[in-house]
Length: 122
Length: 324
Image (cartoon, rainbow over all chains, first blue to last red; front, side, top):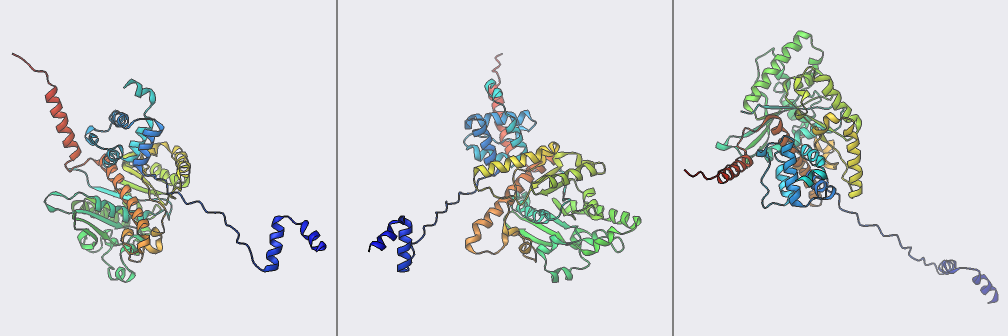
């Protein structure tokens, strides 16, 4: 007993449990680290990117976004006939309709050129 | 009357998905087409001008291709017999009965390789025959789409000579963009329309779907740095893109299986296939808008007419009242 105690007392908790498992033949289940649930893919659609440019990067409200982007499009040579009316639409719906008439690359390039000091003057 | 659209799908680099895009973007354009008045069909003509016949293999099995010997694109260059029209050589590969849009195909031919080594007299004759063939095609079709070989071969140069719009798929790296820049800078001396960036549409292809917003931002930064190397092409680069997908694997896309979205898949794969279809629809919408900007729109523009009415009414109401 004294010899057993001297053997056991030198072990830490994990070593003691492993030793007991070794004797009894049972293995403790090793808990695997849980995988993080994969995030849904980011949306890189043209409407989302242009709306992000207007709302997040320029800090515009939807009403300002409609107005500023329309003005910028006309200023950059886009015909008014190609710009849909925006009365009751969401920004995304309006952009979707706009991109049916004006190339997406052109709209994003124009949206990127809108400057905050131009907004203050309007 | 809008000028007929003849667009070449061209890259200097093979394997970027030119042929897959040519077929499937055309299909998406056909599905988006507005039904014409009086029931006339909207017609698209695909021409396989690549001696490798990759576009043809999407729609026809090897046995079907063999059966069509003598009724293929080689006859569009060949003056030794009679002159052929598109109706003599075409096979219909798609008909959307809802909006009555039709896609016909002029199958490719290995025989076009012989034109590369033809004498100048043979090549001149072939060039004239092909130019007349395309003119005839423009009488009958709303859009002519030519799939070319990824190098400056005789048939590729004839495609560019008869075209007025270029679609260039790229994988987003400086090497691909340099290839497009090379085509434009070298060939715009010969083909004036290439000087106009509105006549060029660069479509990013095989783009990885970003897993989260930070990956998305990194991707946009990388893309921007590539575009900044070629600022004169910036507005030609489409924001809508085709993402990487197993459904676009060449092993599946060929062997007569047809368009990608028509593949038969297990129910569990349908959402992923739908996403591929959405990508092609987005690219087709953007391409339609680019074509309208380049050539104008002959059809009644509903946006224009409603806005014009609103402006006319506003103008009437804003007029000062004149009292005599």
